[in-house]
Length: 429
Image (cartoon, rainbow, N blue to C red; front, side, top):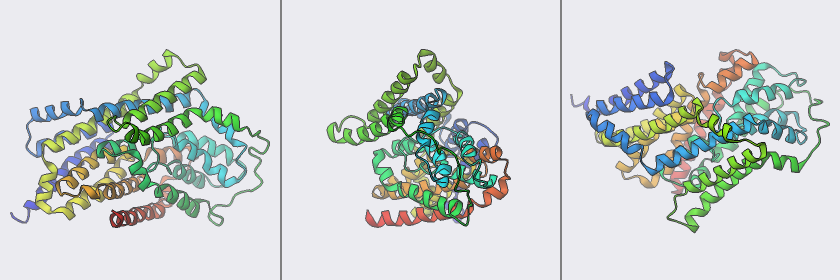
């Protein structure tokens, strides 16, 4: 019995995660799956249903939750307005004249769409990749890989992504404190994309493509069409950095919210979008689903704290085993099953952060967050059920299994980079 006791808390956590992952697998919404897993976790650790309900109520009235709801809602409004008004396409048209290299044209539009945190965004960029590759004579599999890979190069280092925003909200750190450590992920994704999918010898292209040869170049047109994105990005990062200096008592989230409101207002004025647009966006199912995910994450976190899950794991197995599970194994597993960053951040980071606090390792929080982010994102990118991967393969009519096999080597190297970065950050801290 003594040999079994240390693994009991881990078995309970794994069972709760199995329930969560089963919900995702059987097409329950992500929010409902996380919420169900949280309730099961609380019951397994012996807390009463009334206590679970009270924990949920506390989660939904906290400042962090309300700020995050506002931020996520505004980001989705901005993405929807850019798509529905046609401004994202006009921006691409304005930029087309600057794209003279065939390889640059192939990656540019997926990378540009990647700046917008829209679910399934790869299917938005796939037609553009198809257009610019019409006379390049490359295979459908290469088109699918390029579109999928370069659509996701920004996810660990771009301040508008819900996964990044949720991470800093849970950890209670500025966005700059995170992306100043995770930016090597962007460089690696670009480099690995070149080595595995783009370099001569791997991808043969016709350098005499006629696409955009006669397109007029207009910097002012690029600026006008890109203004909402510029306001959102520069405003959010700038205000988030200035608020702690100029007004330390003001929550930094207000800076991000202010920038996003200005960005949404900008695009609405530019495209004459009125009240009907706001009503349509606010009543969209995708917005409700994302806000349910945010609510479920915060409820899960409160239930976990009420059930003292972290303390039980730390007592039973010691720090090393618990930290490995929370920072590597669980994020990778959830990322691979769910195929979305918000899933592994929301379901595993509360566990990791609580464990670090219990073990008195708050000073190591950022290295472990970086390690977990890389592990989880590796799972997301290598996931055969990632919605962007499935939609991209469907669009280009290419076989999923053969295309997926070419993703494995760069994804494994990405996980190795995260491990090396973790040790470097530990050494520097």
